[in-house]
Length: 94
Image 1 (cartoon, helix red, strand yellow):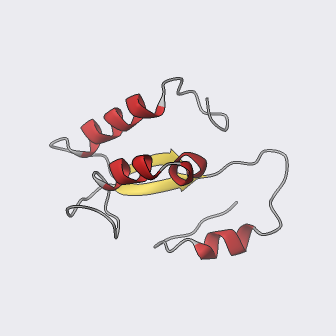
Image 2: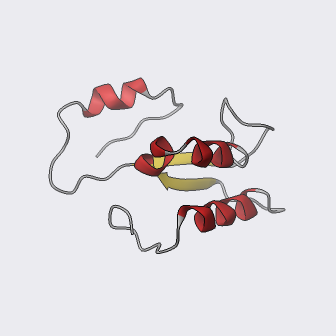
């Protein structure tokens, strides 16, 4: 379980689910992954980029990537700086 989510499997099983969904005939519009999981593993990033539309993507996809980060105790003082450091199309914070 990560950051309050209910998923109990490991990263490999989760990546297999993402790959299956992303390559389906009708892929999802979005795949949501914790930022911490994305940042900690080059393998995770590579596998995710196989199924989402991203500058590092192997092929053009329609599925977009949502990277989420949750801190239920406080709002990080450098939140905006962290977000601006990510080269993304859309930023959102509460």
